[in-house]
Length: 257
Ligand code: PEP
Ligand code: MN
Image 1 (cartoon, rainbow, N blue to C red):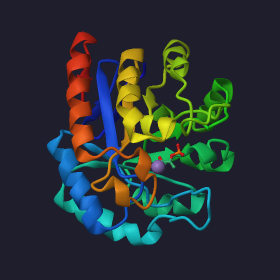
Image 2: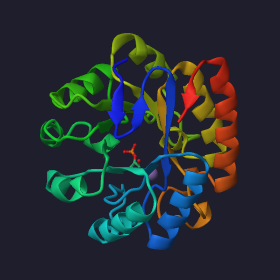
Image 3: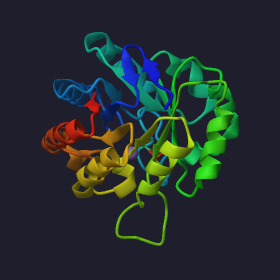
Image 4: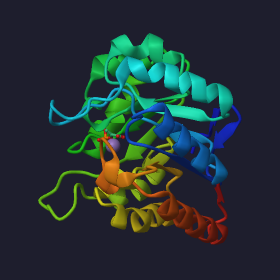
């Protein structure tokens, strides 16, 4: 695997990187409390949705431009790397001011014009798999990001006939891509399951299958979340997951970062 450096954070074969945070940034208080908690857990890459692509247009669409001053203020106080989703080329300029990693969501994996623009930014891009994309299509989408050479793939579950959970985690993809691609492969166990009771088991299985890290949703009050509350881990659930991951990682010779 080709290692990637994001400021002083290194993603490499011997590391397991945690990117965690709320699905959406909802307020300064909410985001600040989650950032502070995650920092106590040793997490240095925080996620937080600003522009939210929602299936139902009546659902919360993210704070959008209103989130920028919140992120800037908290970034000044707390030292962390920030990952957030881009949904339109017109957001590049403003997101460059806050995002250390750009996330391309499942709905935009096929947005080739967006990918072509992200090919020329000086920031890593985490490319999620479209929920019905074959691995071949996903890897072609990653090629659209070239010459950007800081690309991370993220398996986030695919759509199958199964309706008991939100998506089906394709664990084969992790092992397959380790053998057939030089790109780091991450797993998003939150969208892959849709239920917080399933998230920790799937997160641990991702580590064992050889993934290079996780993108995971955590909320200070999951029941009150404005998006994806059902799949968000509470602080207690996240603390216990991180303990398990650290224990498991020892026998795998990996370091949880
Ligand atoms: C998200 O990370 O909150 C998100 C919208 O993910 P996906 O694109 O995988 O649905
Ligand atoms: Mn989400």
